Length: 330
Image (cartoon, rainbow, N blue to C red):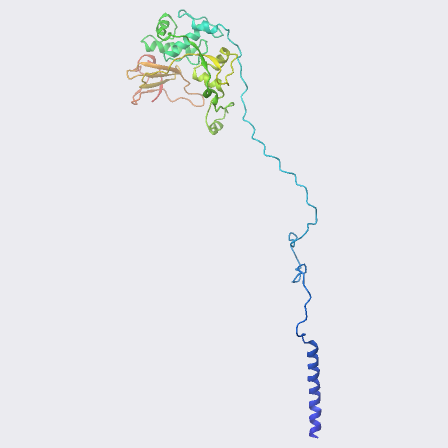
C-alpha cells in the first residue's frame, strides 16, 4: 500500500523532470559555437533611428543630383581713377613781343588804363615785389592792390601814403631795376611730381579728410612760386606743356625773399594788408591779405605788438597805421 502510494506520488514528478531536461537539451546553444553569418558595414549594427537629419549622409554617399555649374566670381576691378581737373589752356595769348616790351618798358609816366595786360604795369608790379611791397598776383593789370603797394612803399620812405604813382616812385624803384623783369625757367621734376588735388572740395569737412591741401596742378604751383596769376602765366606761355619736366617757360623774376627782421605784424582791416615792422616801427614788408569774412568776421579792431601792448586807434604806431582801426597777430 505504502509502495503503491510512493509510485503514485513520485512517478509524475520524475516524468516532469525528464520532460524539462528534454526541453533544455533542445534549446541549448551548440558547442562548439557554430559559425555566425558574416556582417557587412552597409548593414546597420543597431536599429535605424526613427528620425535622421536630412543633411546627414553616410560615408560613400552618392549625391542625388549631378553637380551644378557655378559661375566664377568676377575679377575685382581696379579703383576708379581720381577725378581730373579739366585742362585749362591759354584764353588770350599775349603777343610775341610782349616779353621785350615788358623788359624795356620806360620807368616814367603813368600807364594808360586797359583791360589787357600792360607791359609797363607788369614792370611796375615786379619791381614793387622785389622791394617787398607786394602788389598781389602779378598779371600786368592795374587795381587796388597795386595802389596799396605804392602806399606801403611811400610809408617805408617817410612819404605821405596816398598810393599815387609819380616820378618819386619810379626813382625809388631804380634800385630794383638792375635786371629784366621776365626770365626763362625750366620746369623741374619736383614741379610736376605732385601729389596734386585736381578737384578741391568746397566742403570744409571733405577738405579736412584730405591728406594735404595740395595744388590742383603744376600751373597753380608755378603761379604761387613766381607770384603770378595762373591765366597770365598760361597766356604768357600759350604753347607750353606745364606737366612735362624740362619745358622752358617765361616767368617773372621777383628776386629773393625779404631778409629784414620783422618785430611786429599788423593785419590792417581797413586796407586789407599785412604789414611787417621792425623794432622802430618802420615798415619793412607789406602784403595784401583777406581779413575776416561774413562767415568768420575779424575780431574788434585793435593793434597788438609782440610785447602785447595795445594801441586803440590812437595813431601811436607810425605812418601807415596812423588813425586806423587795425587788428594784429603776434
